[in-house]
Image (cartoon, rainbow over all chains, first blue to last red; front, side):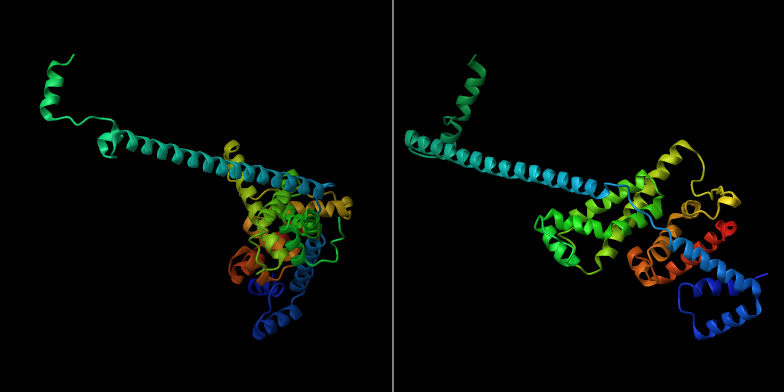
Length: 139
Length: 186
């Protein structure tokens, strides 16, 4: 039966530097226990088995990656083009809009001689009396 | 197209950033094996792992601008591969739990090869794959990094963003399980 504490030490020794004390304990345990020595060999074999396992991708992997990268770039270019054309179109619309508004304001000023709220809204000044008579009698 | 084999990783990254696809292709070639070991160690030798491998390089391509070189390129790519593999495992678990109402972390039984065939290389590969897939993902990833890829405990801890002690305890438990699973083979 393997001493559990020594087995844990053995496992740790495979991945890290044990303290001098622990190292001494483990060496002593390995000297007296054939089972622990056997376990050390087997754990070593597990490590060998795993480190010898080399995976690889199927043929054409690199080409598939480069194709995906190329598609990715195209997607980026398309979205960048859309962004750029949208921005330039927006600028044109904005400039035209501002010009139209300016022309309207100038023409209003020329025709009415001022730029008060009534001129801009196109409503004539209206008194409360006029409003009441308008609401009562106007059909 | 120029010959890029003489360039180091940083030079290739700079060229790839400038739009030289061949430089990026050289990087893919250099790290293909490492990514394959990571994703196939994590997910098994199957089509899903191939897709995750491909996605790893695409993610790397997208993050070229962000790569500052604080860690080695291999470590950086391996981190992407591990994260994507874990995402894939989560996705697969969701699908499995939708169709099978059972604990997906249950330890699976492994069909061991016949005694007479055990010596063959393909059988041993198959058995290693099955043993790896039998480990829980958190144990599997330390085994993949430490035992398959050969990273040091410190490097593995840095890639997984966990303390060194966590890597060591997971490794010890994983080794114990692997020893048990592979018992008839060694």
